[in-house]
Length: 114
Image (cartoon, rainbow, N blue to C red; front, side, top):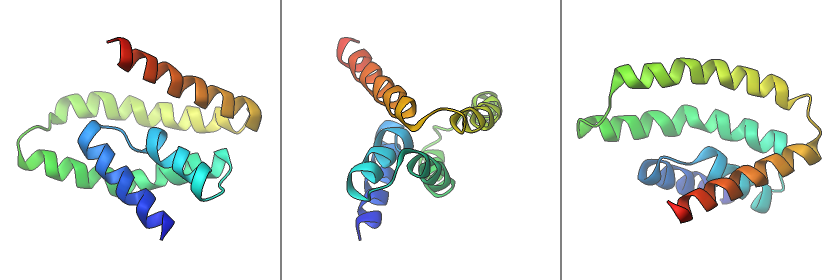
């Protein structure tokens, strides 16, 4: 049941705010499902296969999708994801946790001041 609730939260926030995996799913898997960092991040990325198309369809119905821009962001993003996953396997869990926390704090500060 907790995975269903995490999925509902991820889908809701990804469609509403454009976030989900890194900012919603990973922390919730860490806190409420006793995942460690790597499996939480990998599971979050796998879940995008379901949440992203659903969000794209909902936005496409309203004419808000820009396919060219999506390709220009998505294709390099896929390459970056491969590089990030390869690098992640070489970083200690402690540093990975600290880097993830720093990213979330940085995003929060940026949102608060902008």
